[in-house]
Image (tube, rainbow, N blue to C red; front, side):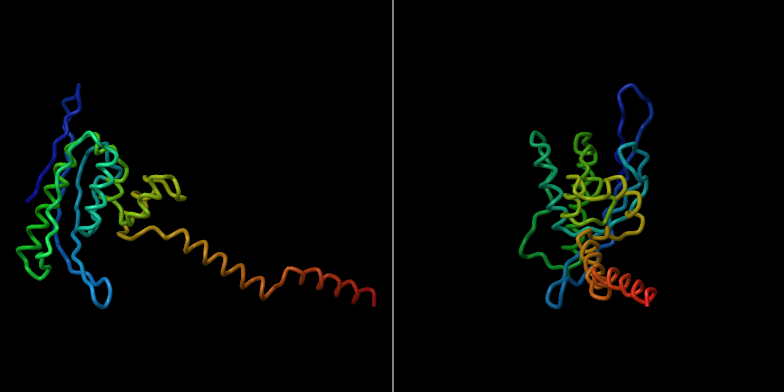
Length: 202
């Protein structure tokens, strides 16, 4: 199913559209014992609301759950559409179950994208146009990262990978500084300078 959501701005005859597709379910290994299914989200739009006019990311069901919770908490007066129910009888090896969930996820996004207030939420755009984790999306929206929402979308959505985790970068830098101190202790410069002075005086 393919849907283009048309957005009419007041006082203008120009129509903006957003085409959203949820497709290509794939089974991913989480660890030796657990697997999950993620889905490709394809966006094509001419809307000024979006930083990128075309994007393609992959999301799993629990990330959709997170998105709905965050959107609802920021728009308490809006009744958000429901996600497909999470049932204990869901079988990822059953094509009918998987496609039914895929359809439900697409219908959810189709309805979300018709609401101008929800379209103003940065979390929605990070969800649709980056591969950031929910934790990284929250940090980005809260201004706790070195990159902005627009940076995340422009620089990393097209690469289909996550932002480097800043904590890991910091740990690598600290490890390198520790190694340098071991090889070149702080007092070594002073000792070497004194050595050269003694040699010249001799």
